[in-house]
Length: 210
Image 1: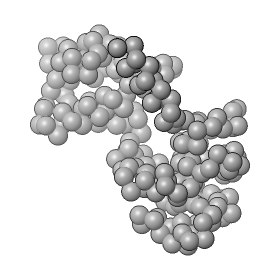
Image 2: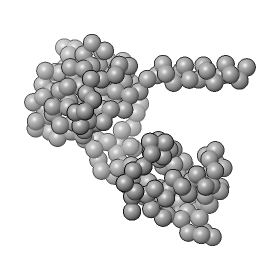
Image 3: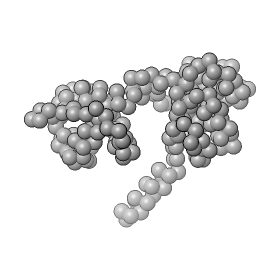
Image 4: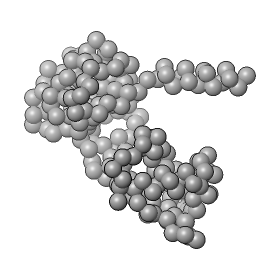
């Protein structure tokens, strides 16, 4: 039984568990102890057990974890099997790179459409997705319930598009615009992706190591 409140730190580690268990599954590993799993991930066995206990009891004393079973349980927790409908807003360099290189379906998302304002690509298809004009977004959302909006539009358009997504019933925004969206308290979850923050964190860590 899932506990009422799970810390954000545990939630952030779940994709790591899922990815690592996928690797073990592909390597033909059938079972693994919490100690061995922790050592391979740079975590302690107690941390592994504590994290997983937030969602149930998955291991057996003296046996450890069945890799395929635990992988499936974490996939269910993360919603990988729910097939969330997603759309991408902005098909410029970054949006196109995501379409071409990121396998949304491996994370449980089904991309259904893309939106842009460039007349050269509106009405065309990109990586098999139809590209609509941004002015069609609200009408599209009325007819096609959508869970996730992937936002790669210019900063100047970010809040306006985010507002349309919220009004259209989108529950989550994957935000690559590098600004904080003005949607607080509107029932939508925003996951901000700041490339510069990641690079600056790396800068700090290598500087401290010198």
